[in-house]
Image 1 (cartoon, each protein chain N blue to C red):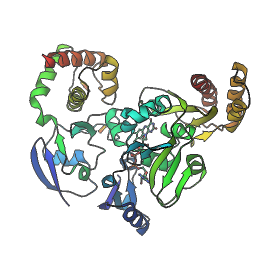
Image 2 (tube, helix red, strand yellow; image 1 turned 60 degrees about the horizontal axis):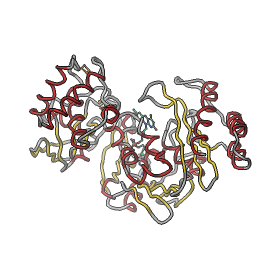
Image 3 (cartoon, helix red, strand yellow; image 1 turned 45 degrees about the vertical axis):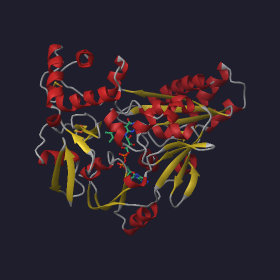
Image 4 (cartoon, protein in one colour; image 1 turned 180 degrees about the vertical axis):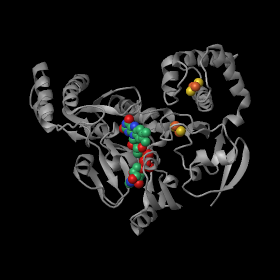
Length: 262
Length: 151
Ligand SMILES: Cc1cc2nc3c(=O)[nH]c(=O)nc-3n(C[C@H](O)[C@H](O)[C@H](O)COP(=O)(O)OP(=O)(O)OC[C@H]3O[C@@H](n4cnc5c(N)ncnc54)[C@H](O)[C@@H]3O)c2cc1C
Ligand code: FES
Ligand code: FES
């Protein structure tokens, strides 16, 4: 059972970061839904709840999503509902129930780079950036490429305002983890193709993007891009599906998503 | 640490360890309608209302509920009883184990959305699993109950 000895509801990010560095067994709390599934005894749990990081707001060029915003916020907030054809709402609304989504947090999810995530490939396709307390702002694309997890705090996610998006996934039953998923976006007429639940971390299909962004997007070109994606991306097997199944299904999901954003 | 909770309009104080979950603390305080099912956040059985919103007490640290308004079935007996009649009329309940969490989620839905569509009802209740009955009979019961409550 997940446990900790001390609890601090910090009053600033600086205080949270200082606490985090004090001991290897100190942790930041998100919604604790995932943490509680583990069996680790921590030292100090650092709660960001008092820092008002649960915002979703519109800036001049970007939408800003605070680390403590919940999945339910993404689902019901007017800004995210409009953004990229409501793709953030669509990628989270199938995850268990309303109560669960009210509890799990955007920052915890993105920071942890979960391979089973529905949100991460969506944010990756949206060309988001992550703002880390110490590490500053970097693209999610670069952040996901880092092998290890930093000792840092994710403060917010930034997303460009304009674009179209389509999220597609396949699940064995409605509230199960996805077998595989994809998000395709079109930003300034450039297509981005992200593949999640391979079952590894979400990645972009650079070859599919190159084909789609350098050719007239005919049916033949779309098929060529999907084929290139299936050759480029490495899929794996687990209890939910084999690599072959994922590869075959992903081709169709990506095709559907491309057609939706064009 | 000493925790002060506002449960069903009553101030309750209890000494807890900071890593205790709301589910266990509420049960210690005697609110036995709050039940543990999956303990992973997947079944909705442990649902209570915090500031009128449905929350999984198995996944919510009790310290985070400090000072907030918590409602369990013990705090809304009248509505729960009225709703139970509509459930029984539609054959939508058998063992009743899911009922506390399910009923509270229905009450929260009614506050959030006065005229939900069938799809909105099913979506809102998606996180409340029932091993016995069919979800369609539950849907009928919810719709009939909501109609009756408007009158
Ligand atoms: C039963 C179950 C089913 C799920 N199904 C799905 C699914 O189908 N699809 C899907 O996409 N996801 C799914 N998830 C994952 C879920 O959506 C969240 O991504 C996950 O629970 C993490 O969010 P949390 O708020 O619970 O984080 P926590 O458990 O609180 O934290 C997770 C990690 O992030 C760290 N952390 C928290 N906040 C920060 C921060 N601001 N900065 C740095 N580090 C931080 C914590 O220290 C911890 O290591 C599921 C999870 C569970 C438990
Ligand atoms: S016991 Fe909390 S969701 Fe199942
Ligand atoms: S009536 Fe038995 S679990 Fe719902």
